[in-house]
Image (tube, rainbow, N blue to C red; front, side):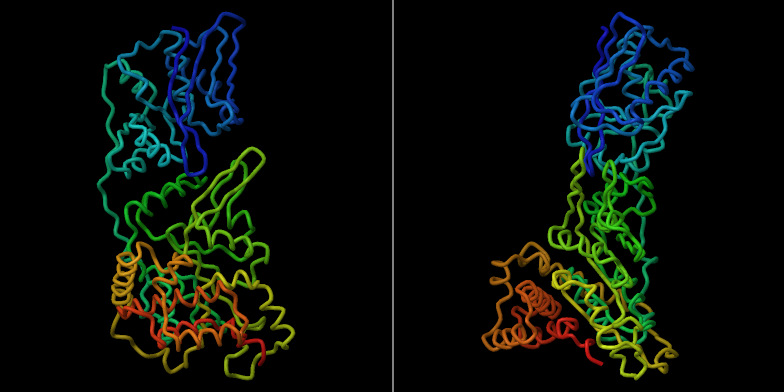
Length: 506
């Protein structure tokens, strides 16, 4: 046999499409050609494989060697194809006599010049792809811990190419990837009891968590906006295993990779306000996930919201609605999940003290208007709650709080509320569509009249109208109320501070 066929997997966003590695030996001038749209790292594979085989006292064929990575129109990158290429060469040159059926097996791994197997990035999508295809997968030992997070997959690991060869010849066995360790992150979460006062802001945080609503906190410096935002993970439901796999798969394809200690931890991403659009939504060549995808199934916290560049903030508009982001480049088009909860914080004016109740704001009305104009109407429409955070009185800062587990009590209410939503409509309130709003968010004639008056007075959009109804539905769910009352609707209207332009005039 001068033709060997080995299966492997490439990287395409959070997916890992199947790749067929075809190795063919033919007479002619000794030369190695790798075809199938390989990137530079893949082209360098021939040098790593040659040195590895020679150092293990195998013979490198002195023939014309053609390596095809199919399908040919899919870009291939990374060192993951070293192992299947090396095995293909050994099989095609009859140096490896098989006792195993290769059609149901897949191989990934980078080779050191000594033949040792090195870790690769994006192992979780590869494991999930192999499991879906019902294939057996051979990976480097360094990836075994991460691969073991997927239950039910037939994944085995090896330290060295010689171990894989011995396994394929039926001379040895390979250990399976298993991982039953459970990591509990509950003790790491910050508690709401650390925040003194701020009953209104805490209530808004609970409403946001209960319905997965986006929240904007507005207040003077030091009022506690960042403290509140950092404590939202303590009141959110625990991450399910399915969601944890999605989170880990996204982290796995980044250059930093997935940290095993983050398993089932709620993502909380807080990029600096100098971040670019690419850093926030993703990009590059090949495309990599940005902060919004790394916050998938978790929280994206944007502190000092108005300090971000306007075009950066505008790039959030589509992901906030769609729950995913499409990155298009000349040779690539990848879709990354981005179902995150946005928590943002900002000052009411450039100096930070407008509307604080004290005569210490140095900004003119024109400066305040320009400052608030950094946030477009379409972006604000997509944020369900705009809440004022007032600075607590100094007397309250010295009060000792006896209850150090406030978040635990709030979390129980949030979990119960979310369960009610799933039981009633199969989704959270923020996901309700137009027809579903009519069905599940009906209000009385009196409440409808009040809401219509508010919409006309402040010239609110249809999207803002729907957001108000969704928040009111969540407030009713927190009380286990069957329908939305006027009290629930009134509270939801209070959480639209910027719509009322409270800070424009001093």
